[in-house]
Amino acid sequence: MEKKPLDSLLSAAGVWMSRTGLLHKVKHYEVSRRKLYIEMECGDQLIVNNSRSSRTARALRHHKYRKTCKHCKVSDEDINRFLKKTTENKSSVKVRVVSAPKARKAKPKSVARAPKMLENPNEPQATTPAAKAPTAPVPASTAPAASTASAASAPNPSASAASAPNPSAYAMASPASAPGPSSPVVASAASSVSNPTSPMASAVSAANPHASTRTHAANPHASARAHAAPAPDKPVSATASAAPSLNRLASAPASAASVKTSSPATAPVPPLTLSQRGRLEALLSPADEISLGGNTPFRKLESELVSRRRKDLQRMYAEEREHCLGKLERDITKFFVDRGFIEIKSPILIPAEYVERMGIDNDTELSKQVFRVDKNFCLRPMLAPNLYNYLRKFDRALPGPIKIFEIGPCYRKESDGKEHLEEFTMLNFCQMGSGCTRENLEALIKEFLDFMEIDFEIIGDSCMVYGDTLDVMHGDLELSSAVVGPIPMDRDWGIDKPWIGAGFGLERLLKVKHDFKNIKRASRSESYYNGIFTNL
Image (cartoon, one colour):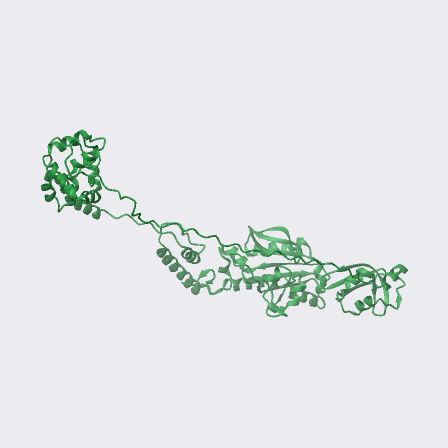
């Protein structure tokens, strides 16, 4: 059986047992994560651990006491409730097991493949009208229009022999296979009658039906021009019909030469790829006025930016030689030391119990961001736990108010972006004792950011760890989160005085101050030095 914690025993009994066995009546109590704050009816106040195995927890669990407090006025009803041992009701629950029906796996649907485009041997192939020409001459009055046009298109054997080496001339000698609107059938018939060699030409066309088909396929433009040409009244010789074709062939090289001598068109610049754009954005500086959406090629842009970054590094080496993050730490240290604050340097490796005491349990989202070394230690995700310990210890020896600050690295598993880092530098300052008001806190924040020359505004917010907070914003970017204490969590750290404090990320301050587009330019990085890209 699991032992109940002390707060559950107090809630059930309503009394408190001292070490001497004296029974007190509880007037009021508060529970934090690890502590109990108890106030008795007699006026006594206690702060104890919320333990399961303490002496008081065992006494309350065993229902034994020696005597009652005279000033608490413990009634008989309270004593009887304390002495009564409550037993848990054991109730049996019937569980009905229902077997789920076996699900049948659905058979995969067959994928119908589209049939390939194959030639059907049974389908008749398309033939040209010239191939369908009859082997014998047909009178113009009885022949159909297609046959008459085919007879008219049959060349003279002698002309065909003369124009055989020139396919274009042969095509020019063959008019269209079908009559068009501009060349009526009567004109074709008249042309056929006036040519005495038409019967022999038809015979030749019938003997070689593929010749006409090849001729039409080789030069379709010539056939189209023949459609538009009117039928001649007189017989046309093959030499005369081939002359225009030869003229066109002679003029073709000249036109091709004129195309070659003309100035070539400018090729468009290809758009930048993602890797190329990332490379150029890394090389860019806030002072550069270069647009990545222009027509300048990538290699030219890269060469120009690399040259500029080399000059920036050479100038920095000759003049400054200070890292901007380290310089900012030194400037902030001087600012707070001049105003009476003590600088703290606490361990980076802290007990995991500190994180749990800050309210970050394993069930919370913040717990997933903690870098845990082992079961007992982790890298500090914030500076507050160590500052709590310093406030408690300095309060015993130093006069108030206690003013402390620390600048150091912190670690969180943040999402990679332009405003978050997994390793970042924090500034935390706090003051405990007199003068810890919201007005003084806002005045100190204003003085600090005026020193940094950064514009800001303060808005109210809340968080899981501290409750109500004051967020310091620069536009949409959060620079700091400030708190006015006390808060309930203070008692777990032994703090019972008012306090004020705030935390700033130094990389974000540099990002705003130098107008960096990416916070990595201001971080501890091997790729950037003072915002200058070093992978040249």
